[in-house]
Length: 297
Image (cartoon, rainbow, N blue to C red; front, side, top):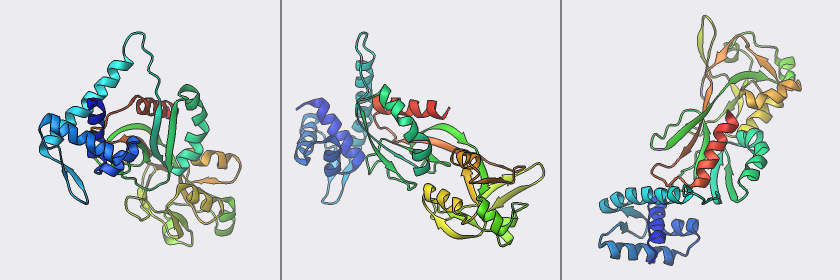
């Protein structure tokens, strides 16, 4: 038995909650993963996992051992990478999930630079605005806007995204220019609703100026759950948009969007890179997180 392979297999089964999923992500057969864990249990003379036909649960002894294993795996990689004269190149598959507008406007245009620095890292990238289960889906990290509700995740804040309120010239020509944010609540004006993955509903936006603080939700005839579709709907004149300025700047410069309520401010949207707790932070993940931080700086 290779003890390193056995510990890796055990840690992955704990994280995935399944021998089948662990085998898929380790590129091993389920039989091999099962045998490695069984051999590890035999060597330790301790039951690490409780297996049923539907689920694998870690035992109390297994949970304590898992904590030590992930630290040991991390220490082994650090030891190799920090040896004098040894050059460890980040490599392998990196599974990340990012919001669709962030991928389109920021990540994809900059990714060739990352690839030049780290040509041996292969991305498997989910691009959506849904909330993924990082552990169950074996995702190495996610980039997410807004406050993180899952306090169990490790997270690094990478930016505060400025927000603004915008509309297409065609919309303003048809409906008129709203003079005050409240016009979006009690008149013929319409917003494009964004269905946040956390709630499945549009949420109010907080605005303030020197004398007032407001929470504005607005009325909509269209609500979507994808950032790129949201922007496209606004450009088509379906309603007023609340956008991070990285999504709006180019369209404002081309005259495709007009900024509204310029004497009002919105609270910026925090942007995080989040990753599983207790997961071995590989060198490839570490360089990607550092790169995203520098990119957003």
